[in-house]
Structures are given as structure tokens and as C-alpha cells.
Length: 271
Image (cartoon, rainbow, N blue to C red; front, side):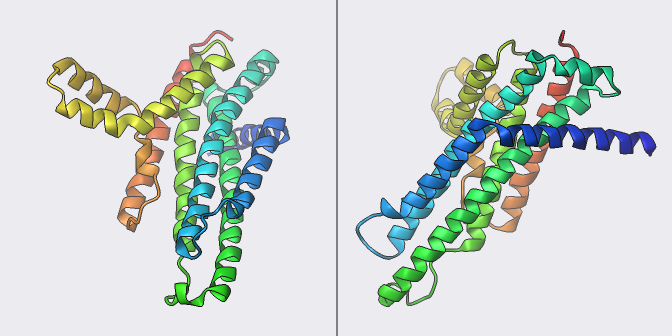
């Protein structure tokens, strides 16, 4: 029990240090301010027809902003935080202490996940505030368009923010896996970005493979479908609790498997 407590303590210390280091980075502050500006400006780029379509435009633009900039933050921050330990040789100091490869890798992952969680949480709250303010104004000025009351489901908006965070944690785990064997941060970030794009295109590739008469294409598509995550699963949908629980389990299982591979890869790396 004592060794387990020490493991958790060392893990939490590395994760906390990673979070603090990420928050101090100019990249995090720049992307956060940029996202804040885009979400706030969404209400000024609205459609010229008042009512629900305008609110949907604001919500879609805000969610898209969180997803896109969150992916940029996840890939760049995870790779940079990992390689900064290698380049500054601080990893040698950590390894000289009773810190194992698993604690180092998992601590980095948890710290990066906390960063993206903070990013998604703050921006989801901001988007909800913007929507609430604009919806209240429209309800007062155009009551006929809101005969059934509020049109924005703020509970669903919170779920959407949670789904975006789960998607980014999967992306963060993949970035960490790539960084565990990559030699440069640029290679890790570029490869992770391509994996992120491929994960969004996976359903379309699968559909094309099913229609293909080539056995090679079908086999390749099937293999890639098992390796790459399906990021389309995390898209906001009107789904029940069973679907959301399934997506959460899918994300946690994928993260666990990828983090295990990252620990194994890093343990065999020459530092």
C-alpha cells in the first residue's frame, strides 16, 4: 500500500508540474486568448435572420473554435512539454530519483489532459454565457420566435464540451506515444496532426473500402480502422446516456492502451 501511495504521489507531482509549466507557456495563453476572442466575436458574425438560427450559428462557431484550437494546443503542448524534459536533460534528474518510466509518461499525459480540460472547461462556460446573454436579448425583442421558451439546451452544451475533452485526451495520448520514439518535436507534432485528420476521415475511408472490389484496400482500411481512433464518435449528437457511456468507455480504453504502448516505447528509448 505504501509503494502504491508513493506511486500516486510521484505521478501527481509530475502531472502538477506539467500543468503549471503548460499554463506558463506563451502558446497556451495565446490560444486561450484567441479562442476567447473568437467565441465572444461569434455573436457579431451571426446570420441576419433573428431567432434560433442565429443562436445555432453562434453555438456551432464556438464549438468549432474549441475543437480546432484545442487540437492545436493538445498536439503542440504535449510534444513540447515532453521534449523540453529531454532537451533540458531534466529527465535524467527525474530518473535518478525513484521515478520510473511509467510515472514519467503517465504524469506527462495527466498534466496535458488537465491543460486541455482547463481549456475546454473555460471556453464552454464562456460559450454558454454568450449564448445565454444573446438568447435572453432575443427572447425579449422577438418573443414570437420563442413561444416554447429557451431553444438552447445548456445541458447538451456541457456534454458537448465533455466530448471534446475526451477527444483531445485521446489525441494527447497518441501524441505522447509518437513523441516517445520520435527524435524531434516537429516530427511528433506533424505526425499527430496527420493522425488527427485521419481519425476524422476514418468513417469515409471505411465506406469507400466497403464499396471497393480490391482486397488490398479492404484489408488496409480494416487494419487502419482498428488502429486509428474514430474521432467522429465524439461529435455532438442528440444521444442518450448509453451512447455517451459507450463513447467514454471507448476513449478510456483507447487512452489506456496507447499510454501502455507509450510507456513501453519510452522504456526502450536511449535518453
